[in-house]
Length: 262
Image 1 (cartoon, helix red, strand yellow):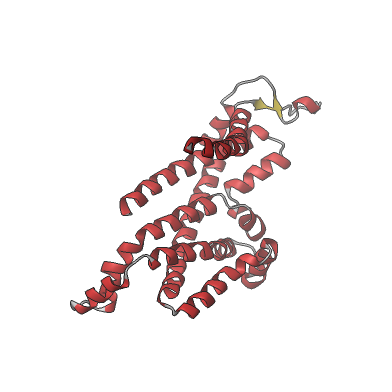
Image 2 (cartoon, one colour):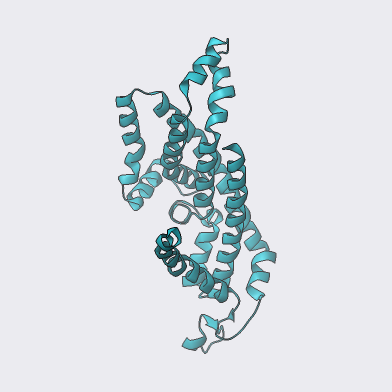
């Protein structure tokens, strides 16, 4: 009976997620489309019926793409670190607030998510000035902090406060009780927020595209450029496949760590 109930969700997942992924994988294994002066429409984007690893060879070996993946990884690490820091501070504030204070803080934290994302990004652009690394990081952090803060706040709410009071009663200072009781017990929530933040920031498109310069473009931005400007669909697909593989490995590793912390 349980399998029957799960069947519609499984079919929806197959239709909406797995099928496009298989299509992208197949696209990455075509030979590049016609780049001669003829520009035949049926060969413009890729050559049907071909099988080639040329796109993966370029993506994995050419310095340009290596720098692209390197910057994307650096951006993800910086954004994740800052997001977890600010998210924990806000989540802890929610945790220690009164019932009415919790409601007010949650509304304030969630308020930016009710803003149109383009309006939000252009607001960041106005605040931080010319495009560059700082605006990209600030924009991504501000987009992700609400998710991290609410996730961490939910984890903190599950921490029995009497354990903190017991630690204080045994002579621990407020700081010591936090580091030895509150923080370890809230780590499952922190790791969940970290997974979400890493996956989002590593696949960021709108923030780097609107707030960054070409040196701050991520893999997602390059995929769009290859698709619509260079019309090199096989490279775009190969970039997607490699990025998905990296993010999948990262998510699996971080999930395993989260299970150990739970």
